[in-house]
Image (cartoon, rainbow, N blue to C red; front, side):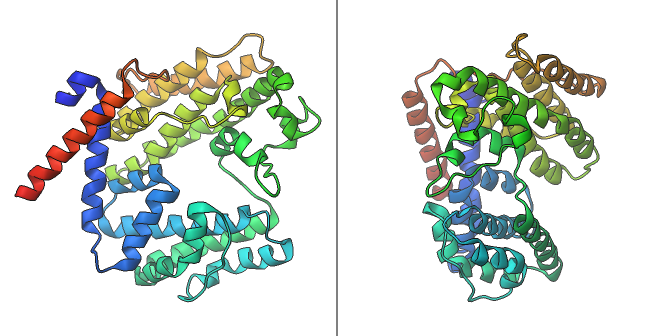
Amino acid sequence: MGVVGALLGPEAEALVRLRAAAWWLRREVAADDEHWAFAYSMLHRVSRSFAIVIQQLGPDLRNAVCVFYLVLRALDTVEDDTSIPTEIKVPILQEFHRHIYNHDWHFSCGTKDCKILMDKFHYVLTAFLELGSGYQEAIEEITRRMGAGMAKFICKEKVNITRDYLEDINEIPKSRMFWPREIWSKYVDKLEDLKYENNSVKAVKCLNEMMTNGLIHTEDCLRYMSALKDITVLRFCAIPQVMALATYALCYNNVNVFRGVVKLRRGLTARIINETNSMADVYAAFYEFSSLLAEKIDDNDPNASLTRKRVNAIKETCKSSGLLKRRGYDLDRPKRNPAMIMMLLLLLVAIFLGALYRR
């Protein structure tokens, strides 16, 4: 542990490392390549966590994944925009994989940063057309499948659709409803009823069933990741999975999912990224976050026994690896002054960058 870690803990130290890594990445993008500068800048704006994760990859693969993510984010923006009539939206989704070869194509939709992405999509397409043919063909094929699937039925990551309930249900002009009816209909007549305080008990029970449903995928994730041999690819795949399980642990039995935004604090996210460097680290994180989730299980919850069974299966898989080690992750907010931490972080980053420039 360095000086920052000794003074303020591992999360503060991890944040400093991440900010330094992000600075180095920005330096690698040539100033005269306007399309690449836009691509990486936009990646940071639409998904800061993913932008950090792809720093683990080499330059060629990193560029391809950056473009790949932005293409799928643009596709997702079209699908998510409830103001687009179905007769216009469906053909765009079905033909999106062909549009990416047309430098001049764009379709204005979405809001905030996603609208900027769509309005200036030609920058992303310019970057796409500079990729090797193998990368282009892979991006085209996955985009084709995703677009066709969206045109028929939307499939979202279970973690995000569970966590983002309130944001999706309050979407204007029309709610986005991704929670499966076969779950929420056990508790309320309409999905939007879960957000009302008088339904809080039912809402939490419904939430816990959603979480329990999602846990069924974790053992498959571990088996898949254990087969990866390249450490950079392992980190790229493992970090989002660890953060997903941590988010599950944070959201489980948490009524605040129906009151506002529930997200991992930045320091914990930074630690996960900084400390996920091997399968041993993955097993440690999965074991600890599943243990934290287990501590929140209410025996009176209708799915308590199934939740505990799935959590115990995850823990047993991690223990049987023989690679467990203690990390000490904690979902509670550290008892430190956040303003002081941020000031120290900025000071240390300034000193670090100043030393680099003097060289």
